Length: 114
Image (cartoon, rainbow, N blue to C red; front, side):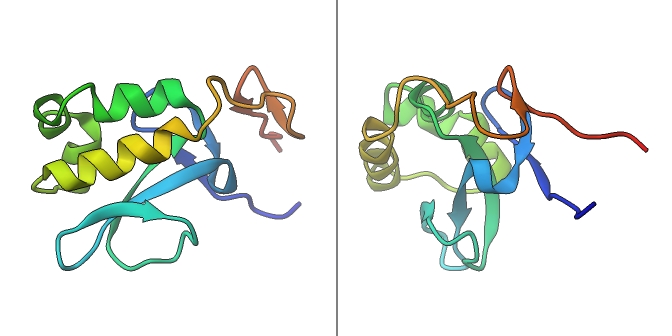
């Protein structure tokens, strides 16, 4: 059986396959952005692909964003531009995750035990 890398959503703490989550990265220059390739250099954190987790992670205002788990996980100095860009990205996401993907039950990856 092939190893499937697992990551934890910083908002809901669900453990999922890395490809099922979206990576947010703090670049070496200090910018916070969405890493669509999953390969950008910098410190990363993961969020589920649903609007609820994103709203929980980034908050409703730049002030809440500054105190969020996402900013803490990235060890970043937040700015309003990053909050606006992440909020805009979150608006494109569905309200709930697709829980019918193979190997997923109740939104959590099923892992076989040896």
